[in-house]
Image 1: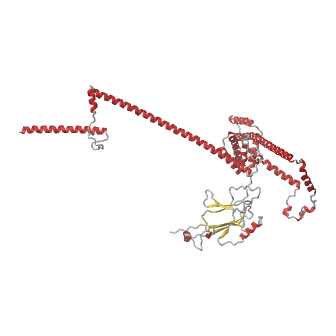
Image 2: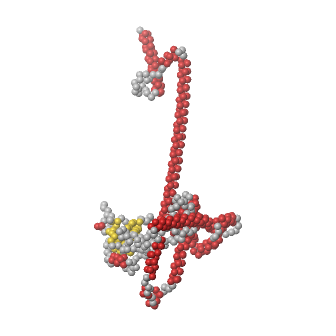
Image 3: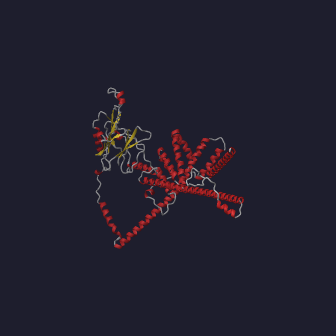
Length: 593
């Protein structure tokens, strides 16, 4: 009994061990299958009962067994098939990588071509923009010439207009430009001040950045050389004095004047060879001479270019005269044909001439009372007796000499306006018209308040305005009578440190401007004012007054504070009976805790 029980126990233990081994083997297979798949026995969304078992193709194995294939041959065929599939997959991956590389290269090439097209389009736009700016500069120059307010750069730009012969298709030359005498371009510097030469230097730099034609760029480059030499000459006059600088310049001018461009090139080579020879020479003199020689070479080039300009301009003038002669001839033939058709006599115009002759003969005879009475020099004041007495012929000669001087200069720059001195508080005798004097006296007779002071200090305008009506009206400054309102500011600090016996410093609290324009031509347009802020100056600004002819612009420097525009607080801006009144106070800020 005991023996049979012991055998039964061993057999049960052996079965348990076998079952445990089988379970561990199945778990190992399930683990390997789980490694190959994303699913596991715990994660089985499709409820596959064989998920933990290795897949075996039973029908395939059965078919191969029927065909007489052994297990080894079947495994070898499967291995071969897997190897071919692996190689095919590698080839597919390789072709896909090549296609991706080709696609990437094509995309990069398309991007590069697109960038090149955009760059070319941008360059085209920039060239069109520069061409537009250049056309605008030339148009502004033509407008300033027409309105008789031309600058030096405008006459130089007019030189370039005739560099190339003007074709018949675009031969649009204004009569105002054809009537201007053109001189050598560098001669225009003789009548310019240092400030005007500086302005011309900046204008030439602007043209150099815009020009695209080689001939025009060469012209502006040579002009830049001459202008820089003129600026250096002004600097030498300040350093050495006008007489010493003129003596040195005179020696160099006498040496280089009248020489052609080819002769100057030969002379330049000789000077360079002399400097490179190492001989004991005055190096500073020869270097200065070489520097001046480059300027004279530029002048020679400009002179050659000017000859082309004059030749083309004469041809344009001849063409215009031929066109006018042909037009007049056609009009005359048309008039003769019309007269012949009407049957009129050609000498019908003699009757008005006879009437004119008769009217001349009927003129009133001369009488001594028609001329002014002779003056007795003994009765004249002493100042007038000191004036030189000239005859009519001497006065005419002096006038003709001044006209020849102006006509020979080709370009007459406008003289800078003199700075108007500040007017005194006293009412002085004025040479202005009676209306202006009356307005000034009426305003001056008003009593000043206790906190008001006179403010008649005019500020000089940095860039004076040029007026297109100067040839019709003489520009003049308007009269004015201004007041400044001052007072104390009793803020917390001043209340703490000052009192009524020891008051704080007065501050500006407002202004009253009264500008008189009694002779304004266009009285329908009231004068205007504007505030001009200066860079770097936050304490004061310029109050700029402008009106029409015949009055110039004036400006006053005021405190830079916020204005009070309420009429209840004293603001007034009106133009009545020729008087512009601008009264204003500054805003006062109150702070609360």
